[in-house]
Length: 387
Image 1 (cartoon, rainbow, N blue to C red):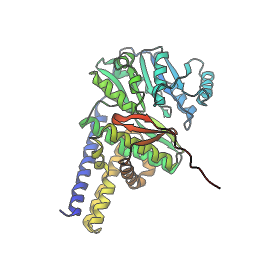
Image 2 (cartoon, rainbow, N blue to C red):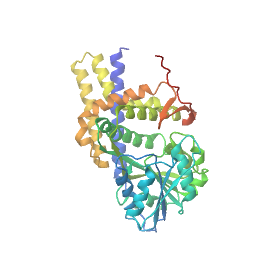
Image 3 (cartoon, rainbow, N blue to C red):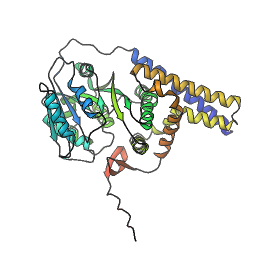
Image 4 (cartoon, rainbow, N blue to C red):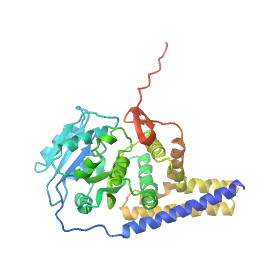
């Protein structure tokens, strides 16, 4: 069979994927979220931190300005006693004297610093509902109320929520924001509906202390890269449901370089390949633009070839606009024309992640083993130079 026919069939398959994704998105946001008049729980917000992200003070303040009827505390954790985040927490304590704010230096217990901090913060927390949130997130005053409400249902073991990229300061950061809203989130909706409901997203998760103890605490995932995925899978294995909230947190991107973004995305992709090997080969179904471009080239850029490319681009843009509308994304409306380039970059990342098991994370080298297990590697020796 000629390559052009194979590529044409593949292009049609990618169109079907995006049509299904569009339907999944519409169905999710049309479904009403749980409402309850029961008393909301007291909460401990656990914030693992390493260094200062872009607009860190504003990000942290958003968690201290919650319209929440009950008491809550915010616990920050670092592994380095010299971390600049500790001084920022002192400033927060001065600026918000009525809030319960504390900072801790956690011992490093495994390869994953974030989980080392969470182990320590969970021991220090005074309340029995934990909200775990990444340091670069910013939220609105209704965040805590909306993410904790589903936990009133005893069948729900963990609440996870979506996130979008905001305030990008560089071109590469805009490309990252485009990926989040046009590729990552639609794929999450498809995966949630047809592949597995037992996973969580890393931006923010809420769970009871009871469910955390059921899975042995945070310690069993100390040496995993995809700690959010592992947390969701393990809670789901206890028979509790993973609830996807329609709340959308904001990831403050700030300035990023191409090298930083490339390494981060290849690391994520390698982790997906090793943690979920049966799903990774299906990701090219999202590559409408590069597949359509290859189809058009194989057809000699004939009218049919240009039509295939045109349909692919229109579908990608339509789903992108749909997702941006539902998540109130502000980047896509200003950068939609860069989506074809973003799609080509996504395909390149997928190809790069097919090779090797080594990843770089926070300046350290690790080997990714089965299940996304992190094995620390010794630092590479600097090349000796001779005069």
